[in-house]
Length: 444
Ligand SMILES: [Zn+2]
Image (cartoon, rainbow, N blue to C red; front, side):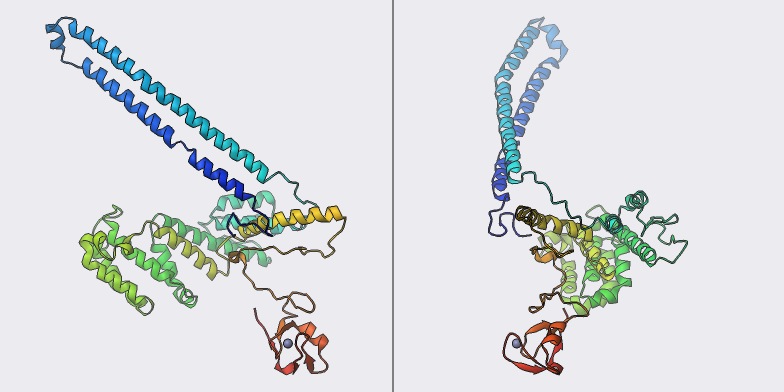
């Protein structure tokens, strides 16, 4: 998505005034209030120390000096308490004022929010998904599975009675991925189960990664080494590299005991056993890691310091792992449901505008299953290039693919057939004539 400040269609974005309000809210924070509270606490604490300090004088002083010290103590306590009053009151007033500012900023933001995004009736006349409740439920179930919410997915499937997914023997249990269907006649079911089992595996590995255990991920990457390599993924090396650093730093992080398998000796041994096969692609990184061994006693002061900063590394490898795992399954790394909902949210303002206009003009868009307007999605959400024939205005399909003419212009196959005279054609966009034999199908 483009920046919040950019307007679509040249209209100013409704988020602009909101951003100003957010800035105001950030400014009117509770920092000063917290300081005041801290001040009050330290004032009270120091007074208490003064008072308690007097009370804990050795008792022999009081007996030897009769009642006088007690009188003077109580006097001093009263003095200390009186002294406390004004500064505390001052700060309490300060807190009230600060809170007023904060509430004011919040209220102002609320108003701006209502103004920027007034409640609108959503266009409900056409519900494109109404006929496909099973598709919707399936997408939700798959989303839950991807998120590792196996029991939620199970309950959802049972309660939604999603026919394409559920039957009596269908159990979603990641620990038991071999659970099978009694009847194997539903292709959809068995592929669903496979997906579910795979997600179970993926989820397990990601959980392990989150608790800093790289071993299952490394084993998976090793087993799929060739396919990962073919995709140009460096996941396997990234995991091994992190394992090396983790072993190397393990003891200092208190993560594992020192020993032959852990600590610097363990890391060295790990590198010796595993790094050789990555040499072709990652020689430079391996060389750096090995050179860093020289600085082992004080890595933080070495030129290799950055290599060993791994605060975010486990999260990063978990993300690349998920992406590569899904990619090998032929699935997108992002949940399709999430993408569909996001794309829908982006296009909703245009839909509202369009339906409002149509209602006003009392007209209708006759083409079913097609949006009457373009939805500008961000590049990250565009997966497949689309070809639209400039002559017929139809989208390219397997049966009617784009064909490039001799001159470089591209038409849909059917359009070309229509304009062809026998085996010859004349390009509708330039006067070049050619032979059908010289045309080339284009694969997007
Ligand atoms: Zn041409």
